[in-house]
Image (cartoon, rainbow, N blue to C red; front, side, top):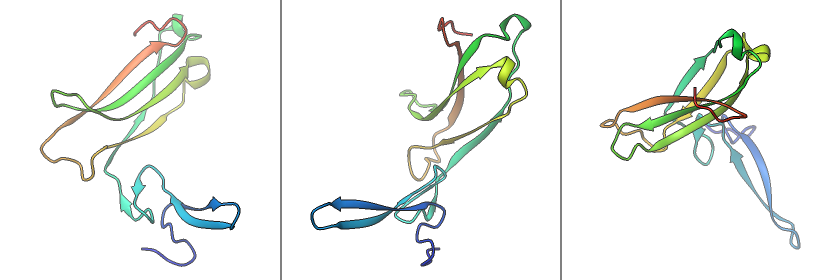
Amino acid sequence: MMNRKNPCSRGIQLRVWLNEQNNSTTNTCLCPPSYYGDHCQNQNQRVSLTMGFRVMSDSRSTLFAIIISLIDDSEQRIIHSYEQLSYLSVRDCKAKFNVYLVYSNRPKSQTRNCSIHVDIYEKISLNYR
């Protein structure tokens, strides 16, 4: 539902300068990942994930890269979206990470399944955990 106060529904309205000489502008909407459309009026199909991590005592000072992907289960294994996090136990041991993964196709295919894939690496050595 669009209104005059906020024509971008769930997004943020931006004024974009098109031409400096004649001072022409246009308004556009910056939508959050969960919405799309000219006025952020359509809801994206997505997976919301909340995770926490724990490490062994010998890895408390190791910096980890965590990559979470939404992957199509087809032969092509299409990555719809992904998020990369950094995790350091001494800093993040009680933290919860909220991740939103959106499907790249609109609407989401009802005939295909998707999986969430989590990869964890040591950030300095790139050793896979």
